[in-house]
Amino acid sequence: MARTRGYDEDTVVAAAQDQFWATGYRGTSLDMLLSATGLGKGSLYNSFGSKRALYLRAFDRYCHDQLAEIAAGLDGPDHKAAARLRRYIDTQIGGLGRRRGQQDVPRGCFIAKAAAEMAAEDPEVAAIATRALERLGDLLADCIRAAQRAGDIDPDRSARALGRMLLVAQRGAEALAEAGVGSAVMKDVAKELTSSVLPELSRT
Image 1 (cartoon, rainbow, N blue to C red):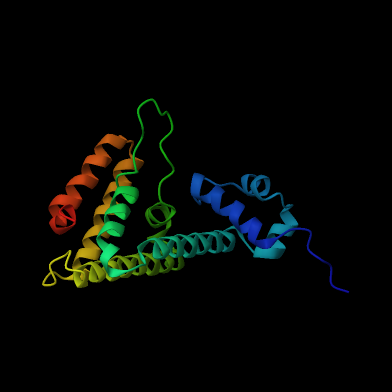
Image 2 (cartoon, rainbow, N blue to C red):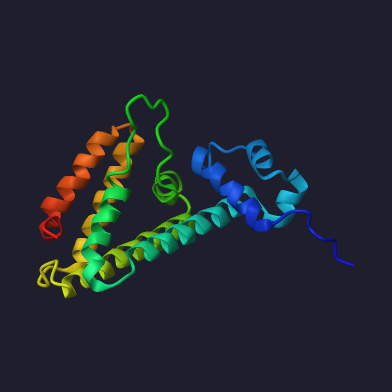
């Protein structure tokens, strides 16, 4: 008779995700993973094979969950697409940065952290990150097309290029926030991005 596992694998992956997100792959020791997941060394290796395999599972899970949440936030009727894009910019860029009096820098985006730390030397990490970023660009482009159909964005502008522009701006803003730039700066960046890069949105 097969032995029943005394833990939920999804819960373990979620706990590992939080640990890797906070301390990175290299900064996460085996003891830290065992403490975060509540597993013994044997159980962790029997279930996931290696620290790297668990990292890949956790990173892929993060990307899947984040994209599902973003897709839900950007989906909807065409006439509200501009408002959804503005909200995305306000949240994903304007919501970044260290607030006055805050000592710790927010942990930022796991995709950006993983790409910076691991993508150059681990093709699987690079592939997961690339797929996630391409999908995010596609989601933004789809929402921009909806706003174009509603007459809120010039239809002659390339939705794909605008989506990639937003993606690049977001990645840059995340890097600045990671370096400790304040939230007031991020809010100004979001405002200028909306009014300058996407002027049609500022008038909706």
